[in-house]
Length: 59
Image (cartoon, rainbow, N blue to C red; front, side, top):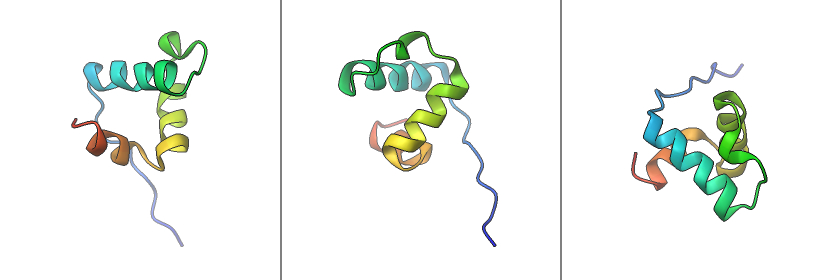
């Protein structure tokens, strides 16, 4: 049995950074305007977890 995952509190600055990384670094069209939930899902997919992204980018 796995424990439920929780998403850490994400600041506006961190969300902006996530969108920027998705758009600029990964070339995902429309990431700049994507809803928060979609951004979080894609970051988790690309980086393994939101926590890993936040630790890597210093948030």
